[in-house]
Image 1 (cartoon, rainbow, N blue to C red):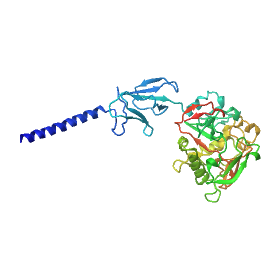
Image 2 (image 1 turned 135 degrees about the vertical axis):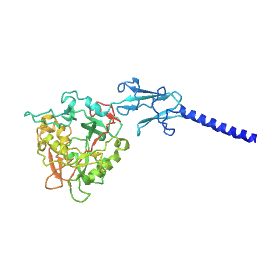
Image 3 (image 1 turned 120 degrees about the horizontal axis):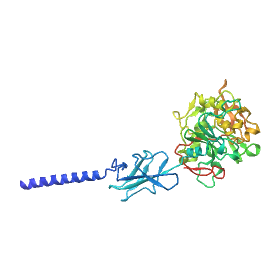
Image 4 (image 1 turned 90 degrees about the vertical axis):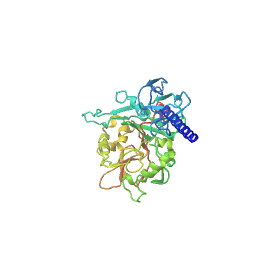
Length: 418
């Protein structure tokens, strides 16, 4: 009997010892929030967080902040290290640092300061309207009679002659030099998002041959006004094939749903399409082309009653607004009606003018429900049926996290981003 009691006491002792050891191990691992995720909590003497003082400076300072930085910084996997060999990584979904290791460790976590593209563009605005070809639309640019002629939306927009505006971005390629087909230009910064438009027109390699595509093309040799480098340019209907009847409703357009927001996104690749922000597009349009840009902006944007995107379908890509085109010209043109923008004094100072008849995203609202605003190859705003075929350029907003890497913004040295 005594022998069985001794056995029983021995088993109890072993079990208790195991429990104590297990508790001590778990306690020693308290830098993890969960054993599975190994998510590092910020504890004194276990984590040192190092933040770069200035972008690309290589100088870091320790911080006592309790949360991981998510805006303006990026995790540096090369410098981040633990003394006892644990591995650190960044969970971009949950914005947390993770550690691969089973013991307590002393870790040094480094974050590089980044310069977002939006911040970079805004930094080029010196406070003087027009320097570096940037205009701040804050309701202060007025005509001779005192009428406000800017957009008054706190946007930073590029304007002026094409050769003077350094707003080129290489998008969709890391190749040096940047392929012409990957050159885009910055329309401006709206809030904290940078808005891009493709430099030259999009062809079937991006838009495809389905959707609202047409078998007709434009030829460079036939249009002396064309400023691009394509030999042949594919043409697309604005909204015709979906119901075999022209309509100026953007939500039913196959140019929108197939060519822009399916084919284009697929053809540029996941890395680049993930940089594009899903957007709500204003698609109310206006009742006249015989208005100055600020009046068009008020009708298109400020007083818009119809939108498309976010709650509908994927809507990362659109087309230019008529007012985008108007404000791309120098302020000397902003008192000219868009219907008269074919004036050589206007087209010569408008970097967005490319010399072929192309679509805007804006419907012409009147008794007939099939007309759209177009840019005529001579440069003026006009209207035509959605069943006509013209060229188009994708327009998109980049996510706020997109970072400026390098580049002066000229066509030969475009801005590089990641």
